[in-house]
Image (cartoon, rainbow, N blue to C red; front, side):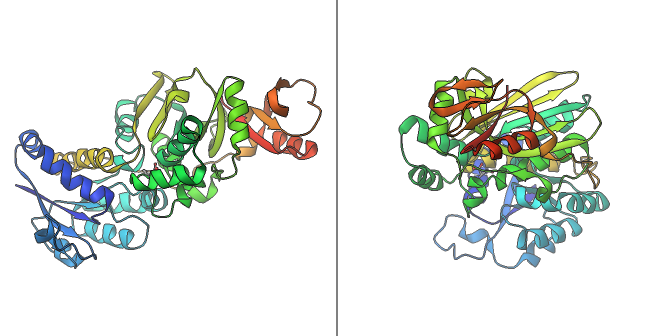
Length: 388
Ligand code: HSE
């Protein structure tokens, strides 16, 4: 019998219990032993909940139980979750999480503790919800030099953009729908301002290149400043506007990561990623481009990835999964990246630009720094990168 606990019984934690209820027999057959949900740690009153008999309020019950193998951390945030994750790892428990804030900010330290204690710290669900992307990146693609990662990494903003365009509803209405469906963060500003996507592109970069990319060093622009007018002009010109997290390895060996709404060609694979779905492109020097697609948020999809990690942690009890990164990525500034740009405003279209309807234009290839200077000189009302 293998025992695990869930810390934080919200959208993800309850989803993990439900996946066990649905698929417990199959999971046990694969593991070769039953998997038992022994504790649920939550400060809320869960009396009346079908899992009420599992609820404990004191973390030390988990910490001191020698028969507890794995702890799922679905508390969120980087305060209590950090303390309990540290203590669980130090107590010799493997920890599995969907908490991208914690992994992006403290993953290196927590993975170091996991290595010292010969346990696993796994976080597949922290990027792309239910999509298997981290394990393919560090395992199946390990023979590649990763050149670029670009993806729709936030289900809430993709849901909002899709509903605004396809259902013609307001930003506020679409956000409310996303919250009701359990996609949004507790504070949806993290979704809308690109912070959540930033954390995810940091984790992808950490794993792809083995050096820590701190979220505070990543240029991050969300969708709150985006005007529907630009989404409409882009559609008319054969583009879709999508919030992308992007990380590239430059020819000089430095790397760059940023988050911004982009124009992407309507016929590209990633432009067809709508609603709460995420789509992540990884380009390796041997494999070429591979795409990962699926539900990037929501209770059961996220719990699916968490449960996969619980099983993996149990299967790697003797020889832990070797995972980690060191500090200090050599980062290039976003301003150095060369791309084409979408500009809109009341100005004569500069020479060399492609004219679009509605007072907009597409520039030739400029660095972000040059494009920003041009937009300022012209007094442009909108400036967005174009990824082709
Ligand atoms: N708020 C996140 C999203 C949840 O919308 O993608 C999954 O990380």
